[in-house]
Length: 92
Image (tube, rainbow, N blue to C red; front, side, top):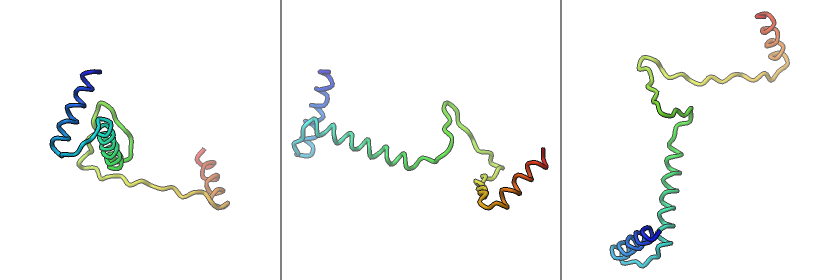
């Protein structure tokens, strides 16, 4: 713990000497945490939604075109629902 405190104090002294602005170690820690938080928000926004793969990479097939996401029409009307039921019965 003493080494960590000494490192922060050295950093504080260098910061104050370089900028001529007096700050505390607590203020430097707060500033560092703010930077980390800002970077995390930016990287989270830049991520593409989809499945996460660990310990392997997936390469897209160069000949394959990207698949579009299909949206299914909800069965809102009674006639659509009846048609759907009839379709299931015929295939069974």
